[in-house]
Length: 181
Image 1 (cartoon, rainbow, N blue to C red):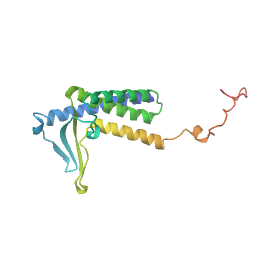
Image 2 (cartoon, one colour):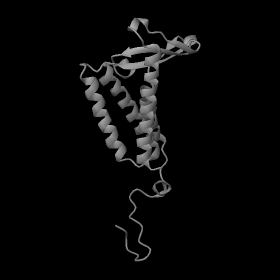
Image 3 (tube, rainbow, N blue to C red):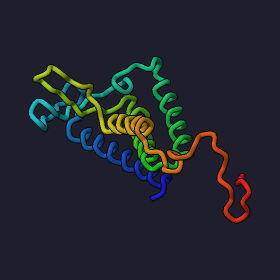
Image 4 (cartoon, helix red, strand yellow):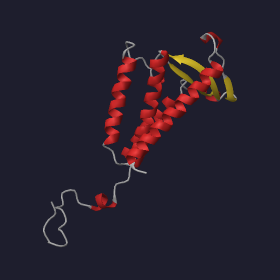
């Protein structure tokens, strides 16, 4: 599969899974006013579905005026598409797709509801640790960014690039013996 197709399919899959889980949570746990919403424990006190209407951004960060919650994601989506279309690396393409799917998923919530549906509640009670309540879009954004960072830090170089001298002239053409342009 080409890098571009991988980008598109990972974005579509991330967006589909995000919106599907939000619709399921909204239908099952978010009926009535917010004070009546109830969650369910999945793994004891470690993992729960706890529906929350999040008016803020990723990790509950505030972006300032409400219009910025539409403008900033649109700008980010444009940047992700721009970088992804210039990219030929499959790992990076998948990462850009996850980021795009997550960003579009949360943007759909903002436009449709005015806030984002968060519902994954992760805790480690023995360490008195509780992570921000999040959704699959947030997870896809973070995983995509981590993949890009890992690829940038630890990505393999091609064998030719690893052995070539940085300032070496191009190798001569085997037929003519002249340097290649």
